[in-house]
Image (cartoon, rainbow, N blue to C red; front, top):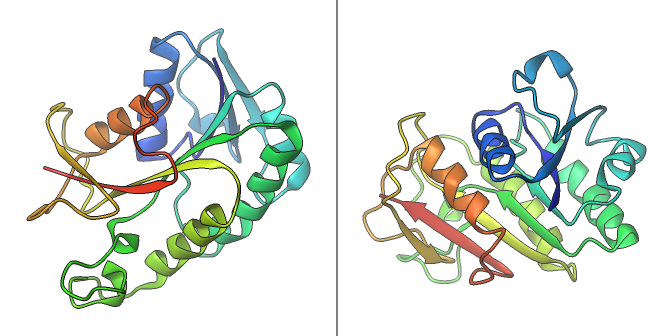
Length: 206
């Protein structure tokens, strides 16, 4: 399978990259700094560019079967600005599947129906800036015709892979307080072969 991976140099993205290569998939990684890719593999194509540049995305997505995005909010608006470009390129190239890493803030609130967690008293964050960025990306995907899945971890320490965690469609599992980077990456990668969460947000926690 040919995968376009965005955010491959980040904490979750680098773990997803390892999973994909070890499983024998070909991966194109679109990165701003090629020096940050430490992995070398004949199945890895490294493309220097930006997710804010339509031509970079178009070049990277050629022959891709699906897109995995582990892009963060980077303190700015990269996530919300890049998503329309990603969606457009996917539509033009006939790529229908995208798996992204979001945040638990955009899951449904249990205590205040009709609100997302970041809009409710469930959120413990001092600022909602990052959640608002993820909300914009979620809305864009929801309005598209793509088969999308958004993995929504809560507190995300580096930790270790346990392989044991809980997931729930559109909600954070009851009492969930954290999930490690490796377990989040593993679950995201597994969605390549799993269609159980198509067009859904997925809360993940221990």
